[in-house]
Length: 247
Image (cartoon, rainbow, N blue to C red):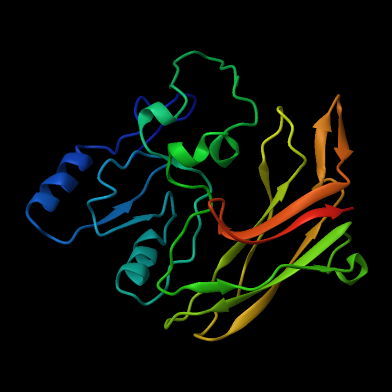
């Protein structure tokens, strides 16, 4: 897919009849792996019929080498989606050719939208690997023991439970007391582990500042004194939580 500056893309479909080509290959009964380079989100109406999908977005001058390393199995993929990929065009904001746009949805976009689970083909933070990772129990750590100044610190053990080496990007989402003008979950941290061999593990520590645990109210950031922290592999794959922590 392609785009130009200052204008919305007319469509989120892939360029040059790529969808038709993918469907034609599937009708031939061939195993099909779709490699996507796009400037942003895209539609994938064939996603449930192909064998695999990999998105590199815009990878720069080493794009070819990166594709080769992943496709031929020399490296295990470890990237995570920085956006939500929608199920259909109706799951997105309509494009506009106006010079300005009103973001009437506010903060309720991507994984923060109330209907995100039903609208996403692939959720925010999603990303598979050639191995699998197991998450331990989330525990609270004294703030003074955190690697950075923090008002709250948690830790979790991430273990490579598969048969291939790989690294995982653990993600920390904070849940604030339910309010109509704020999303339920907000990403407040992520950490990519070292390359872990099968059976190896790493202790991942998340430190949260006062700003991380605040919501914007009446022109200022207000610290919330009761929050929950959820740790997982994506916004839709949360593996552990500490509920109603007092800050």
